[in-house]
Length: 327
Image (cartoon, rainbow, N blue to C red; front, side, top):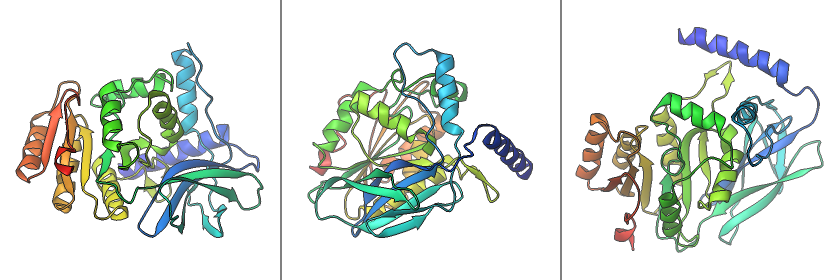
């Protein structure tokens, strides 16, 4: 059955690409926020024939929003393109994604690096974060129903909210903005975001973060692309768990605070992460949206506490101090 669904979805994508995809020779980079490892600066992005989506306008209707959101998924990816930055080059994969690994700069903060596509003169600035040398800890946070109001615990609510809103109407939790701002400590402590939202939403989420004042940070989103060898990607837990492992490997030595919610198995994912990294995970913070945690989530939460990791949970983040023990 999975093979049949895979083939049907692949054929549908080919039809959409022929109907809506670009057929010209234009090329553009969709830049993603990168990060640093102990030795390197990691730049990320995707090469497309064009960027879809328009800036949202005040009073924009739901039907217009729906068309714009669908447009984010109708992408014409460019495979095999060569991108260059500071003497380093890389080729895009089947879905147009690329990763460039450059020498790590000596200074902390956000670094902008011009990147260009071979055969094209235009450059795009790709940014990557180098944490402070005196960072006390790092934060890894989920997005939907953790910082951004979504309703992901109900599929129909999630789809309705995600597809009929825009960057001006989507709401964040004020207590999440306050918590992230305090934990960041003026940029001293790096914040990363891990979500099962697709990479197609990267620029859309960036607009929401900027408008609402959410602390900026590299995002690890999910590839929902189809190919001959791939039907979407792994599970929600596989993606989040693998991303957490990548971030911890890139930032060795720093204690970690994990932030999420009880609506999409974050408690189970974070419990597994704490078991894999017992010396790194110091605190877990969980928002309880909608009906709150079910029996399975409550069991995982109990296991987190039993493992010695400090657990904070509630309907909002007010008064939570997960950094108290890391001062």
